Every structure is written in structure tokens, then in C-alpha cells.
Image (cartoon, rainbow, N blue to C red; front, top):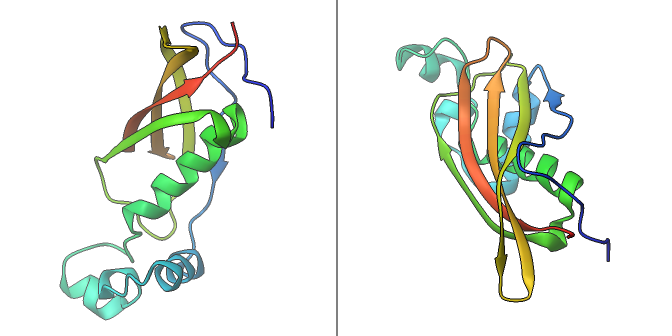
Length: 138
């Protein structure tokens, strides 16, 4: 088991950029999760629905953001993870994942940091916002 990381309020961690998102990425995730909504794979359906491209399911971005977080702090130290989807993601989008420590508190025997999380498109449009509570050193 990894030791908890040391952090300070206001600290950030190196962002991660992924993309451009491909149809294969979306279809593979749909297959893994069983989400076969035609918005995630059928170009004609997507166009008829008024979208510019195949729509990625929000859980794909949420999973990528969780991966960024757990690579930083260690999955074994994550105590809470909550997200909110704020804008659609389309095939072809490039996404950037990051976060910032907004608070540190003692809870029982654990020292917990609150990390404000975000995922954004290449143009800066936020697509996922959230926060996590993670065990930290100190």
C-alpha cells in the first residue's frame, strides 16, 4: 500500500490531457458498461437528434477523472468521489483533467483533503465538475 501524499491547501497536481476522443473509445466503453444508446454509436441518429458528433457517455469522462485522481493520491486513499456532468463531450474532443486541494480536515484518525475536480474540453469548456475526499499525510 502506498503512503498518503503530502498536500497543502491550494496545491494542484499535473493535469492530464487525453484525446482526441475516438469512436472506438466510446464504443468500447459502451460495450463494457452495456450502454447501447444510439447517441453513443449511430451517426445518423446523432445527426437527426441535432448533435454535431457522436456523444460520449458521462461515465467515460468520470472514469478518466477518477483515474487521474487515483494516480495522484492512490485509489486506496480515496474516501469520497462525487461528480456532476455539466456539458456534453463528443468524439473528437480533447479533454484535460485536473484538480486543486481546497481544504484539509481531521476526521477521526484520518487527515482528509478535499480536492475540487474538473474535466474540460480543449477550448476550456467544463464538462465534469466534482470533488473528492482523500487521506493525506500530515
